[in-house]
Image (cartoon, rainbow, N blue to C red; front, top):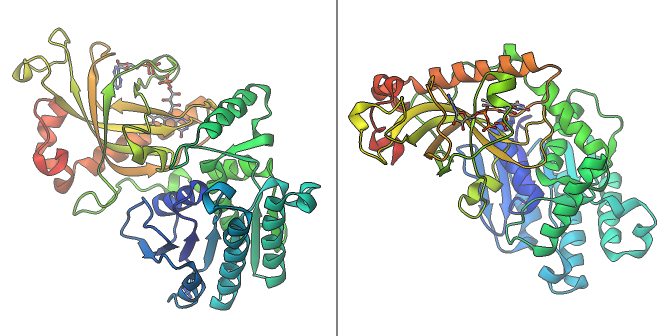
Length: 422
Ligand SMILES: Cc1cc2nc3c(=O)[nH]c(=O)nc-3n(C[C@H](O)[C@H](O)[C@H](O)COP(=O)(O)O)c2cc1C
Ligand SMILES: Nc1ncnc2c1ncn2[C@@H]1O[C@H](COP(=O)(O)OP(=O)(O)O)[C@@H](O)[C@H]1O
């Protein structure tokens, strides 16, 4: 059994897809196996995706995995409407989860994580069928006596479901509104926050820091656990200066997005001395963005600067022509500032003589540097961002990442070649 392999069930759902993308982007887990009815959206050389429409076969498939996964996550769940009635929902939310947990035990899985629900242990557990299903699975996991059982009990799960649900959209607005009152963490949690808490809990368990062998994370533990994740997972000393293979960007990269540069909160230049050009985050235009981990990425930005802009090179005098620059960017909630809306902000590695709001910007995202973190001081945030800039510069300076154009990038004078910008 490899101590760093993981399996994820429910990987095409809301929380499961974030568990998968966070494991692939940041986790030390290799390989990450998914067993699902459909292939997950995530791509990675470390992903072992097993697609099988017959859920009855999943337990045997899990038992047959070699090496057996060290950790297994189950975020399997559906709705009564999607399942076509409560009986069918029971077969998935209860029976399938129970079968998967039993198979995991038989396979020798050490840590089993189940995404349950906040109602599973209160008054509701006795009355609501949904809570009964979750409670039934929790009881099985406890009885199976894994080395470590982890039960995550979120309230409302906030985030864009693949199908996009209207009611959920309304709820999201309502619960986000509560964040101003300091109540959001107690009522509903972002899908990505739940996923990170689940992953971080497995790491704490491996470090012998789980409070018990059957660890239940309640609603207010969830943001706290993932905050620990931000604070302790990455230390400067452990950060690599170069990211990615010498041979060039690997799947799932590149990601592309584009749009007009919009205003942010005006903190970049004023507070940090690091201006960031913001692009609107639109899940409809860039569906991949809903499922990628929040964090710091790097790549190239092409800008259509107006003819009047002092940084517009004479060689690209034509209006609408693009100039390419290396960039580092943050996608997420900026935990230091506790934003409740996800933003995409690009710091271009070039000193500009003038702003370029409204200019059209195209991004080619080639790799992931690190997760976003909370910081004790503004200085610590600035120090980390400056280190990110160095990582981006060094990583992009390699030939397969665009070094051939290194000079022109630095001067911002030519388009990047076809093999990179496509
Ligand atoms: C490379 C890079 C890394 C960043 N990392 C973090 C981070 O770890 N945590 C955080 O709270 N904000 C992070 N930020 C976001 C800054 O907090 C953000 O740019 C700042 O709040 C400016 O916001 P504004 O553009 O809305 O004015 C990062 C920004 C950049 C460009
Ligand atoms: N190197 C750079 N990278 C990104 N934006 C820059 C850079 N230099 C100047 N800018 C300009 O600064 C703006 C961002 O300023 P900032 O203070 O972060 O405010 P806000 O994020 O609220 O718009 C960008 O939209 C862009 O027009």
